[in-house]
Amino acid sequence: MNPLAIKTLYELEPKKQLTFAYLTCERLYPNYLNFVSKFQFGDASVLRTAIDYILSCILNGTIDSSLTKKLILSVEKNTPDTEDFDTIFVSSALDACTSVAEALDFLLDKQDSRIKDISTVAIDSVHMYIQEFESLDFNTDKNFQKKIYSHPLMVREIAIQTGIINYLSNCNSIDLEDINTLLRLQENNGRSNIDL
Image (cartoon, rainbow, N blue to C red):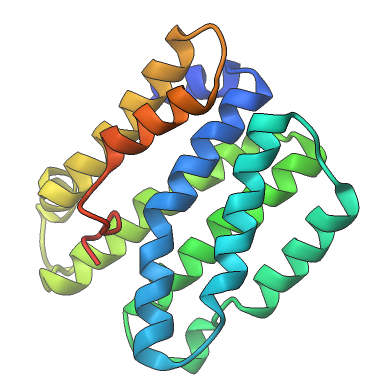
């Protein structure tokens, strides 16, 4: 993500930052669904409930601190440990859980750094996936970063994030119509940011 977009993201009001977080959670959620179905770990409905709750907080402007804390614990309980699985898909599932947990934490503390972390998690998820499936090695390939950042999946993720930030910075307020527009703009035939 370019520094200007991150600076703009930091300057957005909390509701718009939370909208960015929500949209990222939606893009990463299919990665968790894929992992749950293939490896019989976790409960996808926990993440779905948390993501829907984040949307309701955006639309209603109210936060239930007690419920938020319970959802954080539920997401943590359903987050896979990368040490327990020998598959690249555990990282993408972990990233999905991390984005949701960070968004929930943001509801409680409004720390800008959490929104940047959510952006970074989504980019890292794509980065790792490309590295694995293109068999790229940082130690032996002098064009490693160029190959990663010119890959269509990475180009799309960065373009989506930049587009969302631009949209949010140029609108006066956020409502369901705006969110549905942004969901359509990032829509990938029901697939995630790594096409799962």
